[in-house]
Each structure stands twice: as C-alpha cells, then as structure tokens.
Length: 617
Ligand code: F6R
Image 1 (tube, protein in one colour):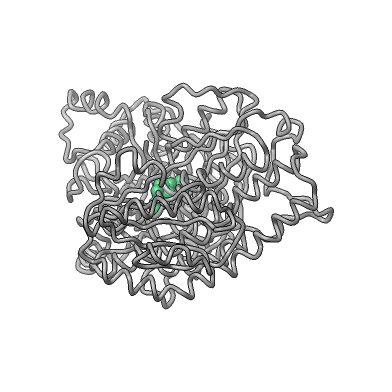
Image 2: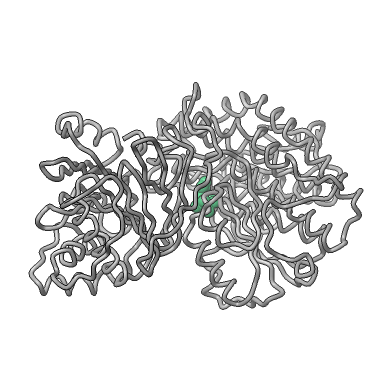
C-alpha cells in the first residue's frame, strides 16, 4: 500500500489489490482514492499472504467503477492481473473468448488478458518453459514455469502497449511481469523483491533496481528474479542504483507536493546546471551517442513534448535559434507523426519529458528514428524508456515530481534546453568558448533569483484569495513570455478548473480581445525594458485590454515603473537576460494557481481526471 501511495499521483480514480496465500487469491477493490482501498483492506486482508499485486487506475477503457478497477481475475479466480497501457486488439480477443463461453465482468481491455492466461495455462499443448524458479521446488516451481509459458504465449498475441503483473493461486509466492512500451522496474531487496512502474514505489525499501527491456518477462519471488528474453532464454540481470533519496519523494512539512516542488526550483535548476563543464572548460551532455560531426551537419531541430514539456520546448526555441542559427520547430508529440513531418538524417529531434514515459513522445521519437533522425532526450527520470531509446540524454535534476501539475520539471527542462543550445553552439562553432562561459555564468545566477521570487510569494498568495470567484483568466506574453502565458494558463486549468487561455499578446487584437469586458482578469508577462521595442509593444497590449475594462495583473522586472499606471496588481522579478526570464516569470503563476486551488478547497496534488504520467496514446 505504501508503494501504491507513492504512485497514486499516476492515476487515482480507483484502486485494487490481489494477495496470494495458501488458500488462494483475495482481491479487493475500491472506487476513488487509495484511502478507500485502505479501509476495505483493514477489514479483509489475509494474514499470511506471501505475494501481492496492486494498481491505481486512470481510466482508458470503461468508466472508473469498482468492476473496472484492477486487478482483473479469471473466471475461476485462479489468476489475477494488473495492467498499464492499452491492448489494441482487445475487441477481437474478447469476441474470440466470448465464443468459447467466457463472460466478462468488466468493460476493460485488460480483462481479455487474464482469461487468455487461464486458457493458455490449462491448455494441454502449452510449450514448456523449464528455467529456474528461485526459492521454489516441486509443484509450485512447475506451476510457475507453466505460468511463464502461458504468459509468453499470450503476450505474443497482444497488440498495443502493456506492463502486466500476474499472480496465481497455482504458484502463490511468484509474480510474473511482462512489458512492451510501458514502464516496469524491479527492485531487489533482502528476501523480498518488488515490481513497479516507477522505482519511486519501492525506493524506501531498496535502491537496487533492474531494468526490464521491451518484450521481456520477469519472474519474481522473495528469493530472486529471473529475466526471460523473447526467445525464452534467461538473460543476465542489468542492475542499477536508483539515485534519488526516498525523502525527496515525501512531502516533508509541506502541506502539498506542489508547494514543496515549487520551492525546490532553486535547487533543481542549480543541480541541472552543476558539473556541466569538463576540465577544458567545455560543456558536456550526460550521455551522448551522437558523433560531433553529425551534430555539425544537422540542418533542422524539431522539439517534441506534451503539455508543460512542450511549453519548455517553445522557450528553448528562442534560445537555440538565436545561439545556433538553426531552424527550430516545436511540435506536440501527439501531432508530430500524423502530419508526415519532413525528417531526415540531418534533423535533430529533442524530446522533452519529465517522466520519460509519455507514450505520445515515445511514439514521436520512434517515428523520427525510423526516418534516420537522431534524438536527444531531456528527461528527469534516468533509466526511463525515452532516455534509453534516445541517442543522447541530458538529465534534468529536478528530483522526483509528484504533484500532477508540473512546476520544477518546467524550469529544469528550460534550463537543460539552454545547456543543450549552448552545447550545440559550442560543437558547431556558433559561439566562442568564452561566450559560452559567459552565458553559463549568467545562468548560474538564476537559482538565487528564483529564490528571491519565491521569497516574494506572499503577495501572490494574497492576490489569489481575491480571485476565488473568477471564472475565466486570460494570460498574455510576447517572445519568451508567450510560452510562459500558455504554461500559466495550463496550471490554472488543471488544478483550479478555471477556464484560462494563454495568448501571444500581439495576437489578441486578431480575435480573442472580444472576450475582454468589464472586470476580466488579464495576466500580462512584461519583458525587460532593456528590450525596449518588445517591452513597449507589450505595454501597448496592456493598454488595449485595460481600455476595455480588464483587471490587469502584471509581472514586470524590478524598477520597471512604466507599467505602474496600467496595472491593477504588479508582481516583480529581478532582472536577468531576456532569454532566461521564463525561469522567473513562471514562478508567480505557479504560486497563484496553487494558492487559488487551495482557497477553492480543491485537491492541489491530484486534480480531477488527470494522471501524472500519461503512458497511453
Ligand atoms: C502539466 C503537466 C503535463 C505534462 C505532460 C508531459 O502540468 O504536467 O502537461 O507536462 O503530460 O509529461 P512528461 O513531461 O512526463 O512527458
């Protein structure tokens, strides 16, 4: 249950658990948050269970009801299964099973798999698997071997994406797992082992972990782990050390994860910047499997990502184009491959993802790699699918992000993209070494300035209390302020359930200004007055909305008093180079959304309908 609680942010519309003891399987499920399952469990948990599987759900197929909650069980109750992902040929398989007399207890795609496992297990002609089952002998070992064979024969028929965990009363101390495209890690403990979609689930018990690759099956008992390749052979174990301390994944004294994570940004950005220079004063990425000659030959960059990650990419575009003089496109991962993009061996794909498991982004990079492009991943999770499948990795060191609304991941992604831009400028000779050092020095000043903005947070929190009845908020920005406006609006939508839109400030007069009437809150991100032309344009935009009755909330640089007469409320940020401003201007917007959600009594960390890591397309 502790492990499930740590992963609850990934889906929380229902939860369930299956436990195995000598008597058979006990399955408990509850709709809603994990606390409801905890209650059900306190009355009915078997005392001698030796293995268990659990799941928190984010509904894809079938409404979030008890009957659709995982684990799903075979008709005879001997097999239980949890699943992440989508089985794309579920309809076909369901029809086939119905013909053999199976009746379905749920509307999910998952349920077909457990019935197929039962059918395969009981089938006389099942191909045998005869590997070792750690700590098991006799009947139990034979049952476990049979289960491996059954699972392998079933996964061969599945289309789509999955991580599956299977428990059976035939071999009560054994858990089997299989994965294709969805995440799965194994944790190695003392006389206990763990399986999870994220190491976070077991990090308080062990930091020793195993990678499980595509189309592999893992057999796990308390005594050991066996990893089986697609050809049935036992594979050497690929062990690694999980590198975050378990306390970074707890709230500590903060009321919510989101507040904790907002305040962790100075550290996250500083950690992301740390140790990037080698002994010769040259920038380095974490892991690069792309020759420098190839990086010199690229003629286009396409940045892919979803939601907040894509907004980080939009900020990055301004910097990379300016520093490297390469055209940069930013595309939502989910749209990328469907528009038949022009991708060649000279295209560099930059995939941005906090989790490293977002299915839309995984599919985007696979599509690009098929066309011969190289992929640089900007990810926060080492060992994740995106980091493993990419040709180069630049890690953001934000630490685990638990609140569903992304905050520190955004600022760390922007920082990492700046490093990438400077790295490319170095490799391609667009900037001299001393210029790069200068850019890096100024970037290293940013964490302290983020801290200053955080220290001024009380003003923003106070303002949030005045906005509790707002039903719509408009965000405006220009240049790098535009993606910040989009990000600010996204935060408000996702945790306050308030309709919010971010617009390019100059675009407003081409339509959206019709939305503005008396009292409409409009938040404007004002660029530094040192970029006078840009600054004056935004000032003019504030006046346009004000003239139509808008309530104007302005984020402006310290000392920029030209905004005073047009602003009902002003939040200040310290001066930084124009391109770095998003790292500061986004902070008041994060604090505002977080505080407003609290004022409205909403669940800040786990907003409705959402899940932290979207592992389905
Ligand atoms: C918004 C948010 C999402 C994610 C998006 C991508 O606050 O968290 O928009 O940014 O789902 O997730 P990752 O970065 O894990 O690929």
